[in-house]
Image (cartoon, rainbow, N blue to C red; front, side, top):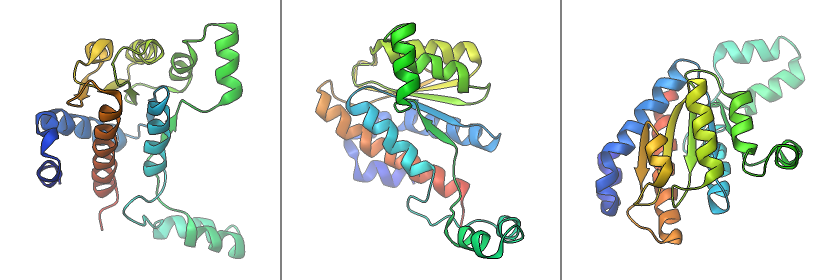
Length: 208
């Protein structure tokens, strides 16, 4: 899949090895029961929510529940369980740290406006999980703080940045650097990169 992706996005050929490494890291975490925590600011916050939307339900595949899961649902209630069995989809656990308004504003008010992501990583994160930080410059302080908290907690870290990588690149296990320093161009590259990663993860987690 990656070769085909690069063929249709040749401007990202310099990112190929890092995209492959990010995919392998995510696949390994999910295979071991891990989850993904995603964060960014502004347009990158929207990207974090977008990523979670692709992972927590069907993206390119329908992901029907298994026979055992269907049975577990229907044995509880024929009508309600049957309804769920037909409509629920397999999920790859992922949380966007950009929502949770009450928690985020409480942390910002009580502890510091740059701490909401780090506090959530500290609370949600477990060794083997992945923190995926998105920053077009790579220097978003709130994302960098979350990356430090994640590293201390034993999480793996993926950075998605612009060409320079910034502070996030130094903290990340893998940093995919879009080949631009112009914010809107970086964001356009980011959409293509994370759509590929989500599609590839789905294909590996839910083989037909």
